[in-house]
Length: 171
Image (tube, rainbow, N blue to C red):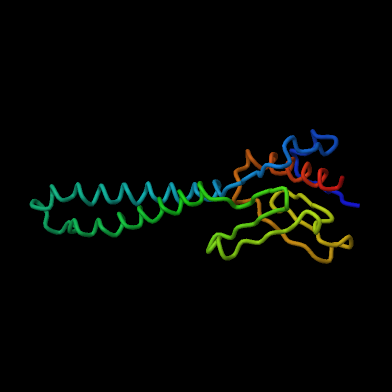
């Protein structure tokens, strides 16, 4: 018997797990919440680059100002942060497919992807910061999934989708 135990505040309004409307489709959840610090860092490095380049106009009056070539360092860091932020926003962290839950790590997602079939999951425990997929009734084995990469506004949808997929796979 599969069951869902939830301590997540958003699930209180759903009295029973509803079946997924279109179970043949997959649901993607990205790392959008992890992208925000990278966007902020990219903006800070970009502003630093602009300031170092603007100082070029005052270098003739004050030769102690830094050389404009120092702007290459924050420009490179800004570019790197933008690339990471786009990657976090664009690529999946979790995919709920008809076959199971696909989990993609931050580094080397193509080779490190992990697939957990719905038939292997006996219970889903949903906390505020972690989702635990149990593989045994006695909860001796399973996997913990951090919710921090997923935006807070999307987390209730993930919880509802997990409960619905588990209810659909039980039939």
